[in-house]
Image (tube, rainbow, N blue to C red; front, side, top):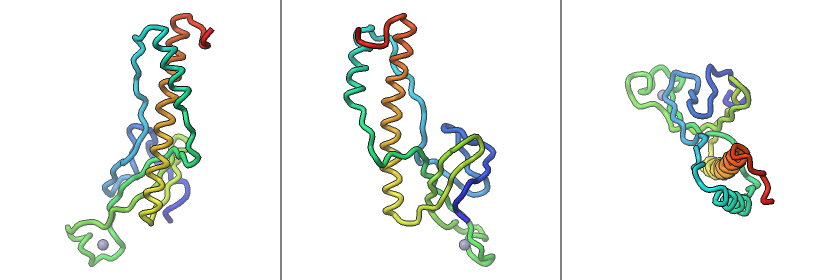
Amino acid sequence: MFSGLWELSHCDPIFFFVDGGDVSRILALHMARIYDSAKSTLALRHRKRFLLAQLKLHPDSMRASLVERFSRCGKANCHCHHGGTKHGPFYYLTQCLAVGKVNKFLLKAARQQQAARRAIEHYRQLQEQLEELSQINAELLRREESLGDD
Ligand SMILES: [Zn+2]
């Protein structure tokens, strides 16, 4: 019951809401940062070369978010139904696949949660480097420069 595609009302990398009801917290998400484009063309080219030298694809990279969630159980007489604290935290790996489509499942073991955190961080770093490279290339084009070093 914890896996598969879940229909969500909203699936945006920045403002991402899990299916309402219980308290959810986003622990990791992806945002596009805007990089300084006021540098000289030479400085942009240096930065580009540096980025390309730094680029590293970690085999365990993963585009996903880790969602921490507290919830009520099925027992009507449990404290969680009578003003007591909810159960949790439970950690869900979530992946936005398309608008309104999310792959989501529970990560039960701490070792899985750690692996997910690392994989998400590797992806985030790579994405950040690619984003900066992309913005540099756009700025070079805007300046009517060639994209290469020539
Ligand atoms: Zn309970």
